[in-house]
Length: 214
Image (cartoon, rainbow, N blue to C red; front, top):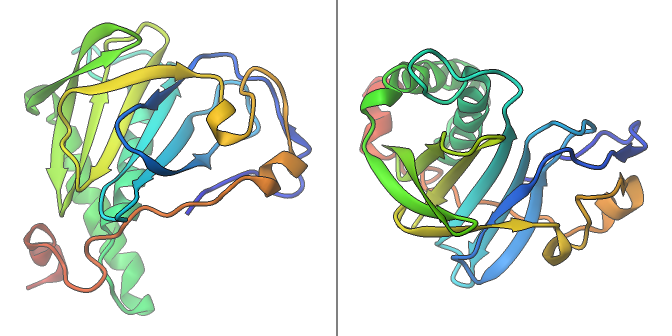
């Protein structure tokens, strides 16, 4: 579900970076999240007409330097893992959800520490070829590229291939907003809201079984 400003905020200021979007899916699209800062990540959502194919794409400005290996910065990767967790969360009783969430995050953070050996996929960003590190987990995938000078781009997908995506700069027109100017509370409240499919609500993926103690 989209995560937007609190009602105490007056507006999101003009963004100090270019926002990127996917061209792959036709269907529903929405602004997934944006914060009241000119350098906060922006996430956009897409879901195909059949409801089974979907993706989130995040533009994450380089607020922190890449680590010594040249891998994506920890903040960008941690935020992306958080989005992946929301998608792959299994159905569980409320009293177990917090402990399970901690186990899933610990597992994904362990995987993230080995991002240098993740397989790579190829994308085109604003007409330029880039490489993205890929993690598949529990019926979804996360891919993130470190090849742009100003931002990381992360994509989380369900039911679609992580390969060969065309990614373009967007000003937000297709979402009913303009990222180059302030976004008011009124505008935010009128925007459509979308939801990623959650493939593990009815039955957990085998990747999740060890974390569920099965």
